[in-house]
Length: 201
Ligand code: VGL
Ligand code: ZN
Image (cartoon, rainbow, N blue to C red; front, side, top):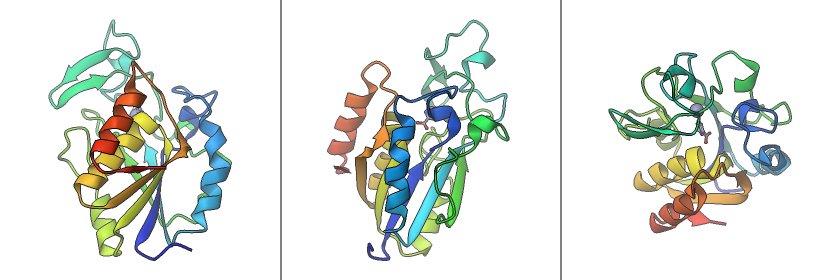
């Protein structure tokens, strides 16, 4: 058992990020048994859920003529336009059926505002609008985070970088993550995380 100051943050282990899903991450389902096993080691377990309305601005389908995986510019900066995924209330947004959810005390949903994406579990993509997770963790005395889940180079990396910036001691268990790896995004995310003092193991 880890000390009570340690929390496990399980990022977006949802059907749409697993094989067969709308934004499938290669091998996304391979990490689930490992994550389930880890849950027993942590007194605090948080799950995140990408949770978009159908009219979300991050969907290529909502930008006439735009291809999935192309880049656009939003008021808050560059934004990848994704295939429609994790729409609120759909099967694709549900957690993978093999993921244990009972040990989690908190499920944090993100990306629910139509006009702004939220990769990070802590802040939306403007790097300013909080999700509330920081307050939850701090008020429970948590100082160290272990991050696992999908995808390494987007939601896991953005969460890890924000957490490090907020002063948490952050470890990403790379073996319990899988990446999208769009145009070198995995290498870039790893370098950024290392530079920010995130431990990659
Ligand atoms: C994610 C792209 C779009 C993720 C979520 O969970 O990494 N990636 N929405
Ligand atoms: Zn999303």
